[in-house]
Image (tube, rainbow, N blue to C red; front, side, top):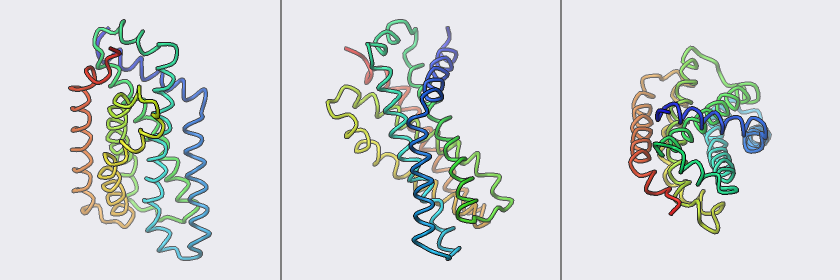
Length: 225
């Protein structure tokens, strides 16, 4: 099988696991809903402040989702030496990295869109013509976050305190991504599409950087030996 077909098969496996369990994504969605409601109650009837805070709330929930979903999928692969089996049968081990990026990106993008829909309803966000650019922005942010998460996962996979090390190692890498995402989405919500261009370019550079670094370093970092 080719590199791409192996990666698609592995991504499909990850998505089926999460679809059937719905643990990590459900907990992230619940956290986002609670955060939106609590912020709405705390801020009160101040629409401008609520709309200004919405992008940050979306990406805080996305950070939690990136950590929880990535850790769960990696934990499943490491159970009963499943990862070692995949390592031995795959012709090109980079398909493990690409497949994980594809599955994580899909989950994170769908979660972002769900949170944005909830924010529109709960925080009375304005829906302007520029809102049509939110889905591709969500996809780009998801790819950047998933690429960084997939790379960091293999670096801490065998650590004794992986659940603690993963967010500590991943957060510094995702800060630029989420900052760019917050600024770009804020610009789109305020009908300033021109101001979002630079931030979108930053996201594209980050996605390319983490993706390229993962393709170069994954096999060495993830080797079971």
